[in-house]
Image (tube, rainbow, N blue to C red):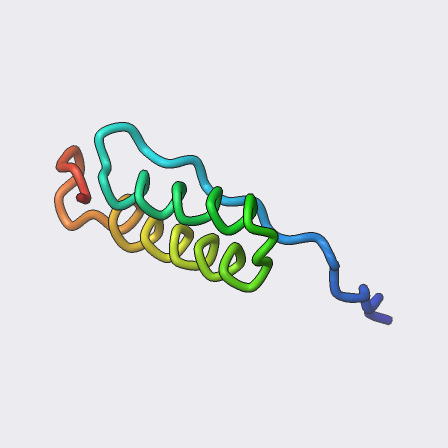
Amino acid sequence: MLAVQPPSSLPLPSPPPLPDCEECERLARMERAARAAHDRSRETDARVLLRHHHREAHENRATPGQPGC
């Protein structure tokens, strides 16, 4: 029998911005500003965009060793 877990109310953590990646830094700033403004919707949007950027630009590089940004 499979155990069903209730959805977590905790947000997934953001990946750390990578050094020398302007887009990572921009999205991290966007998340911090939204958190400071208590805008949870915009904060979540920034986290999702940062995870998407991380996956597309840094994890799926066509050429290993080449920067993704």
